[in-house]
Image (cartoon, rainbow, N blue to C red; front, top):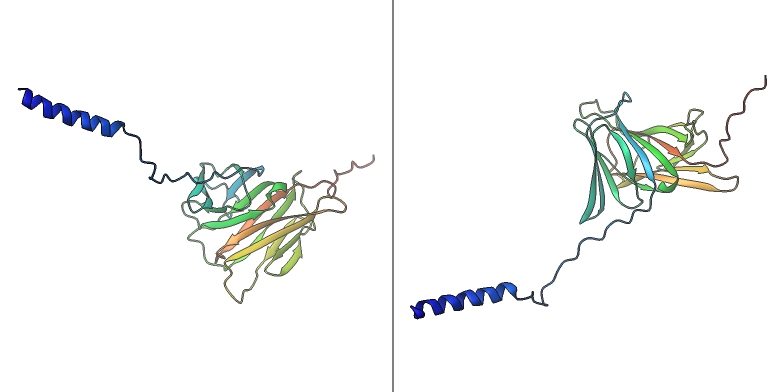
Length: 221
């Protein structure tokens, strides 16, 4: 009997030692991808259709690197996002075409609205349009908008429209907004469209301003 117990006991002892032994120092342990540092403002975010109605079940994909990203889910098509300069963003909703973009100069943006193009809508070619408002919800006139070398100013309603023509297909298409924030200072924000879409892109942005839009004066009785 002792001849049978001794080998089994030895085998159990060896297995226990193997389980308790520390990992070899020669093994490479991969570090987790660096976490995106959040420094941008919380921005009110809405996604609407061509009729101006909120689109349900919108996902926003934020890609910070090849191994790091975040997905935001908006069941009602609105919420808040801590946008950052640098990551790529993609809007996706059932029945609508994806919109991909990056942002720069987000520190003076308080609200942004994207309008998505339905998959079954007739093709109208690429254009970019929208409306700019101040953070007090008033139309922001004379904001300079630059796209593909063309420059226009927003009208009395803060609206703008571009239908740029391209000799070559751009990999990125910046739409730049420039406006005064003080009597001597200017500010700038960019919405950089990725992989120029073949359908209209429409957006509205609310921008912070200090002196260019004073409160309306009450009329004298």
